[in-house]
Amino acid sequence: QKEVEQDPGPLSVPEGAIVSLNCTYSNSAFQYFMWYRQYSRKGPELLMYTYSSGNKEDGRFTAQVDKSSKYISLFIRDSQPSDSATYLCAMGGGGTSYGKLTFGQGTILTVHP
Amino acid sequence: DSGVTQTPKHLITATGQRVTLRCSPRSGDLSVYWYQQSLDQGLQFLIQYYNGEERAKGNILERFSAQQFPDLHSELNLSSLELGDSALYFCASSAEPTTGGQYFGPGTRLTVT
Image (cartoon, rainbow over the protein chains, first blue to last red):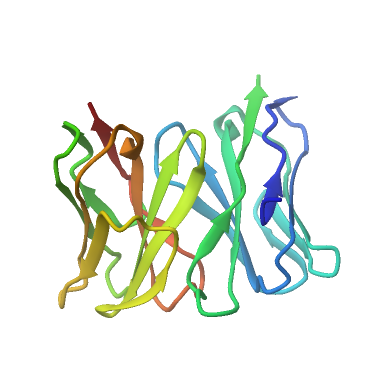
């Protein structure tokens, strides 16, 4: 079993839709959680960083963490064609490899006009 | 633009050869991380340096080595290259080990023929 599980999709939605992306994890030592957006063969771009359970909002993006269920989500409101990309969840912390990030496999999102 | 730079962008080399990938972190960042991204394995953590010292190690092959120099730039050395080493190699940086998230560079695409 992988430490981080992410539905690879692909996910296709119409412009303006609310998108929900999810990851589950098994390592209870994870302390911080991030979401990245990656356009084809480009470097991952940091979208959200959170350290605690609960919600964090930034513009059209909301990150949600539920440590008790080992479940994190990213919501995208009013999705745009420019949001079409691969979304990666990442988490880390705890133990001797505090800086190491463990990534999900990524969800491919397409927003069509 | 994340502020992290990587050179070269592309590298094509033959099996058995040795290559060096270079990374300059964002101004002020002390931590540098290296990741490998392949189609079948996703993004995998290789190694982390903090202010010149190795801080964490992932499943990095013995044929691979890295270092961080006094000016904080980092180099990843890959030797005795195999076809399976073909991948995207990303460098990321952060101010403190993961405080506020890791910022990725554009990557180096390595093709081993």
